[in-house]
Length: 473
Image 1 (cartoon, rainbow, N blue to C red):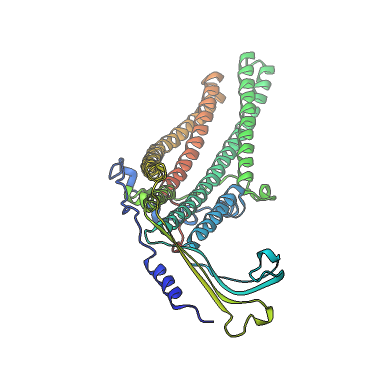
Image 2 (image 1 turned 135 degrees about the vertical axis):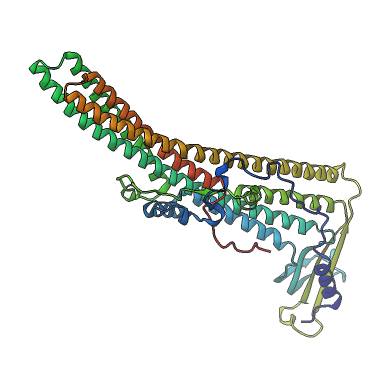
């Protein structure tokens, strides 16, 4: 079959002229934050931009748990499926930029009464057609369809960045839940050791009371410490179980409970020093900021579509094939048929609909700018808070370690002086209380510092370093 030359020319002109855009030239808004971080620790350690989560997490057990969560967590799976929806939506919108082509065949038989027939006689008329048809296709002279396609692309990219943000958040949640579980286990072990020691002291004081060398007050004080240890043991056991349950939920597998180690870790679980880099690096890297910028670019493209609505729209439809009154004659000579129907529509009066549409698109862009700037400010504050936490907790951890060592030595001395009859039992009990409080505080501060490191890594956009595929065009 030979397609008419003017039809081919029209399609070529459509593809050549299509793609012009009335969308404003996009310019990234200036970041409403300072040019550098405050604090001396901001540039100490390895840059977060150079770390992926497998490098940041040095403990193999924790790396294994994070990998399991990334593969099985239901909330993350739902977020990843949102990407598929956005990708499909973009491809649907992108398809409008290319002419379609359909193949079809049809047949029609109709009886005409005599008063409607051209020869005054009743009869049956038949028509058979086979060919190709061009569905309604808009010549995108002013970029309306291109702007809608660009907006769908940016919305898809925003969804993809949101999924990266969800992945980083899941890595952080699993790491922090594991750290809470580990800290509760360490406190539980300390409490059990303390309880065993206090029960031994209680038994010794009971023997001395019977011998008349210890008073009832001494016995009651020792008994009170034993009961306090039992209460602390149940509290720590509850916190450990709740952290365990949180880990099971995050891992998302049926046998998650069996894969969580029960013993505490003595070595560091994470990289202990992270440099923040510059705020500009944060803007280029953090997924929620990138997602906000893609949404801003989508709203910018919407303005182009709204502007194009003021201009004429030209659409093309047509068909080419064969037609015959007899099915056997469809492919005989002289049966070729075609139609070409261009349509021009120009808005003259729409009661302000197009102008309102443009105002709406501009207002949505302004709102997207404010959301983008707000996202940057929130991210800047999260990084600043995490830097302050890691900096102060590092010094606090060192001080509490020294305090725990001192109270431990004091406890040994107090015990020796009590057993030697130099000091009273009350002073020995005070030394026990002080040492337990200081050891517990050290464990809690150590756990909080590790959690702060995870917060810093997450807030800097770390955790998901990979080779990104180029965006769909």
